[in-house]
Amino acid sequence: MSEVRKQSGALLWAIVAVVVAPVCYVLSSGPAICIAERINNDLFNTCCKWVYAPIAWLSLNGPEPLHDLIGWWVELWMP
Image 1 (cartoon, rainbow, N blue to C red):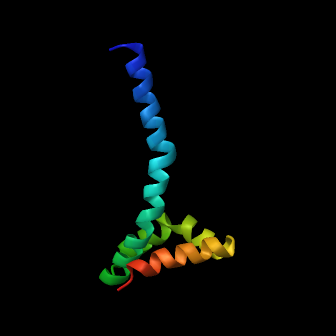
Image 2 (image 1 turned 180 degrees about the vertical axis):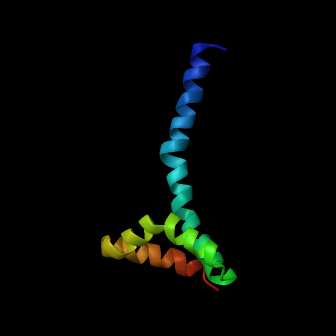
Image 3 (image 1 turned 90 degrees about the horizontal axis):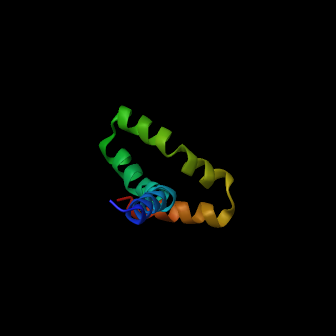
C-alpha cells in the first residue's frame, strides 16, 4: 500500500473521531432519552443518565440558546 493511501486513511479516521463521533453522540441524546422514558428500565435509565450527563450539564449550566436547543431536540423525540 502506498504511503499516500495510508496517510489519507489516517486522516479519514481522524476526521471521524474528531467530528462525526461527537455529532452522533449529541444527536443520539434525544432518541435515547425518549427510549429511556418509554421502557422504564432502571438499568437503561441509569446508563442514559450517566452517558448523557455532559449534555444535561450543558443544558443546565450553559448559555440560554444552548439550553433551548437541547430542550428542543429532546422534546422533538418525546411522544
